[in-house]
Image 1 (tube, helix red, strand yellow):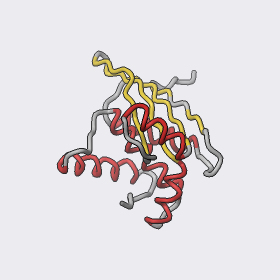
Image 2 (cartoon, rainbow, N blue to C red; image 1 turned 180 degrees about the horizontal axis):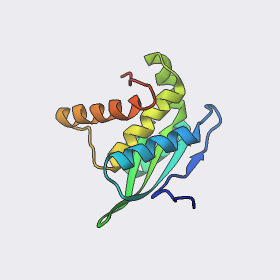
Image 3 (spheres, one colour; image 1 turned 90 degrees about the horizontal axis):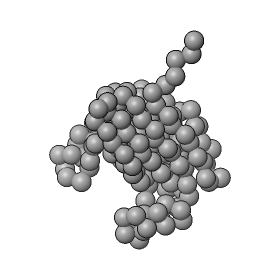
Length: 151
């Protein structure tokens, strides 16, 4: 009998500039959900281009610029702790930033997915102390992939 995962992580690759390792991204999301005590979840991932993430950032957050990652918590239930959310990451931004930071675009994209998923499970990075905690959690989850984030 095959055990069904308590985490559903569909991946939509809506861009063509960067090859996307869907399984690697799913593994990262599932590791975070399990590591942060989420019992059941559906987290949709979308990998998009800069014009798309710019439009979404303007539409939903009133920020008129492209960004690296957006996350939206659609539903949260505390008994048992369950979440439903979306993480939208820009492949274009990952490609540019990866060159700047000196690592692979796929690794930069993975960082965005990790960061967005951490937001879904309750981490924030608006204040310095919160940012320190968020960065520590990013390092923790990226280490499982043999990576150290480059900021």
